[in-house]
Length: 78
Image (cartoon, rainbow, N blue to C red; front, side, top):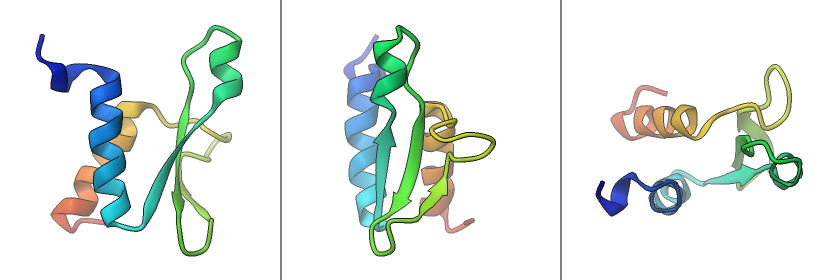
């Protein structure tokens, strides 16, 4: 397994790409404390508005969903 496949490496890479689009990846720490994997959301830096990961509940997006959303941004689809 290469380093780029680890969640921490993926998260760092995704944060860099998101920053180029004016977005910040937020992670729910409360869920991690409860022993469940933390959910994620994307926030627009200019307005502090959540643009992805808040439906049906806050921090509902997985890391895979965040990665897919950001890849669509890079491809110009969003």
